[in-house]
Image 1 (cartoon, one colour):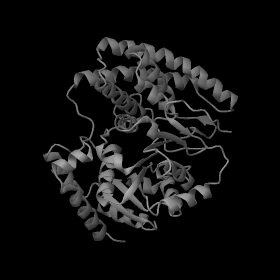
Image 2 (image 1 turned 135 degrees about the horizontal axis):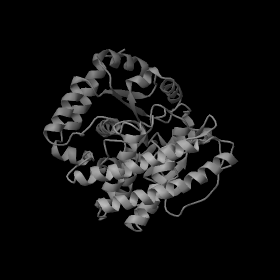
Image 3 (image 1 turned 45 degrees about the horizontal axis):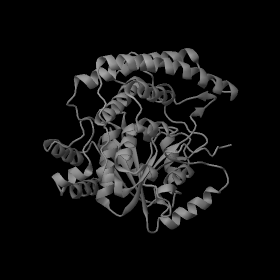
Length: 407
C-alpha cells in the first residue's frame, strides 16, 4: 500500500488506490478541450521492431485526452522513415514524425550550427530538443509531456497520472516528474539511481557543503525517471543537455525557472520495466559507464553555476566519500530486497559501485580539462531571438517530409 509521506520540499502525489483511473481520464478529457495536451515520443527506428513500442501505440490510441503526438525518429533512412510513417498512422490523434536524419531537418540543423546554436552531439537530448521546438512551433498546446519508447509495462493510465497535475487548472504545478518502483522479474533494478545518484548527492553535500539544491534533488523518489509533464509556458526558457544527463538537466532547469511550490512528483505505476543498458565496465563511451559520467558532469556543471569550486583534490575526496556511502547503502537495499522476496547480486552491486566511483573522478577530470565546454543546448527563446523564422522552417520541413512519404 502506498504511503502518504511528504518531504516538505517537492509535493508528492501518491497513488492511494482510492480513485478510478477512468474518473481521472474523464476529467482530463474535459481539461483537454481548452488545455491541449501534446505528447513527445523520442524514438530510435530499432524500437519500432521491438515489443514495447507497438504496445505503447496501442495504448495511446485510446488516450482521448492527448490532442497531439510528436514523434522524434532517430537513425532512420528514407525506407525506414516510410515504414515509421505507416507504423504511427494508426494513431487517431493529430501526429507528426520528425525525420531527424532526413535532408530537410539536417539542413535546419546545419543552419543552427552555422549560427552556433545546434546541439553538439546526437542522442536523446538532441531528439527531445527538436521535438520541443516543433511542439512550440505548432502552437496551441498548454501541456507538453514526454516519455520513452522502450517501456515494456506501459499503460495509458501512466500517462493520465503523469499529465493530470499540470493539466488540472486548479492545481498550481508547472512541472511534474513521474516516479515508480523499479522491480521486475523478482529483481530490484534502478542501478544508476540507487548506486550512483542517491549516494553521490549525500557525498556532494558532505564535500561541497550544505546547499538547498541537494535537498531539492534528493526530494525526488526517482530523479532519473524519463517521464515528465510541464506547462508549455516554461518550455522556451529551458536549456537541456544533449547527453545522458538529460533527466538531471530537466530537474535543474525546473529548479532554475520555477518556484519549488510549482513542482511535483507523481506515482504513475506499481510496476515499471524498460530496456536495460549494459554496464560496459570496459568502455566508458557506452552503457551505464557513459551514463554515469554524463550524470556526474551534469551535477558538477550545475554546482559550478551555483558557485561551487572544484579541484582535483575535491574530486578525490568526493570519490572516497561516495564509495563509503554507496557501500553502506547496498546493505540497506539488500535487506529491503530480502524482506520483499527480491533478488540482488551483492557482488555485482559492489562492482557497479567501484565502476561508478572511478567515473566520479573521470567525470571530474573531464570537467576540469574542459572549462569552456557548453554542453547545454540553447533555449528555444534564444533560438527564436537569433532567427525568428526557424520555427516556421521546422513546420514546413516536417510537413513536406510527412507529405512526401504519406502511407
